[in-house]
Length: 195
Picture 1 (tube, helix red, strand yellow):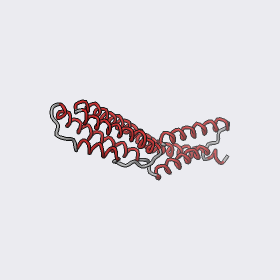
Picture 2 (cartoon, rainbow, N blue to C red):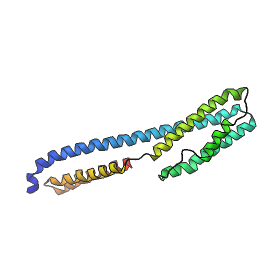
Picture 3 (cartoon, rainbow, N blue to C red):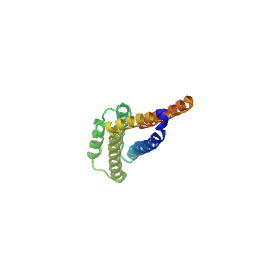
Picture 4 (cartoon, helix red, strand yellow):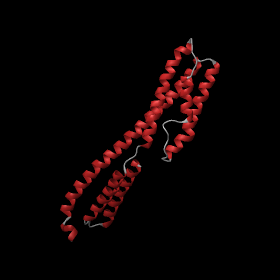
């Protein structure tokens, strides 16, 4: 009976709290999804640059071509077998690595080139620079996460929204339980998306 007396007030407050919480959660989800999309784009760009570098090695003499390809493959293997698993486990990844440094050293230390190799060398340096830029973006996006304050706000806000639903006095408790379950389920799904 006491709860029924305060249902109208609770309803207004619940609407305000839920709206504020929805705006916060919406911005967090949008921010997270934007970073995810940016990371995907960066990954595609890094992969394309690596593929372009590998393809451009055709223009170099066989000895230099073999060196370039070995270092490009070593870089790709290090990214796939070392860096990606580390990023999956939220471990830090250095902006440079041994294979990355060897790759740059090999291109910078290339001998004087002529013919087709001289034409493709500047393009290769451009692609190597693109690879470097996308590598930095990939690593920085892997390190970026929501602050602990935002996680506390998200979890505490969800608890407040669920708590507010107890201020309603439904005649059928099964319907109330169903609504609470749906609300908690949506909260859990959004938490999963943010995570």
